[in-house]
Image (cartoon, rainbow, N blue to C red):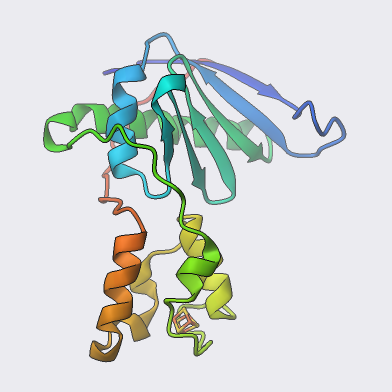
Length: 187
Ligand code: SF4
């Protein structure tokens, strides 16, 4: 296991001292530098900066940053939420590292697609079949990796095949990664 444990740090963002949400860091006992290109190859919307040995990613309202010796996550509600998020991220790194023989590492820096670029390719009918109020809301959630393309039923119609193909090309694929309960933490 690449990351068997970590030390937890929780703090109020220095730029927002009165904030009611927190940032948290998992300080790692191992160097995860070699795992970053594999994460870059599998996490949709991740931005890898090889010279800095860092990879940033947006995950369901959280900004996540992977560095060689730590993993940081923003916008957590409390200590328990911070632990849950960091445990999940540690599992993600461990599982990706275990599967590295199946993954082609990606050393390039991708540009995140903009919500507008995604929106322009959606059907634009605001039909709400995806449970979002508008296609624009869906586009915002899509670039933040909070929804999947498959949850827009009209994109599955033959008449939308071209749109769907363009969207798939725009969004870096994110293979499903089954996580096992293998992370541990230090409080
Ligand atoms: S299901 Fe698709 S077309 Fe309908 S509102 Fe959602 S994104 Fe737009």
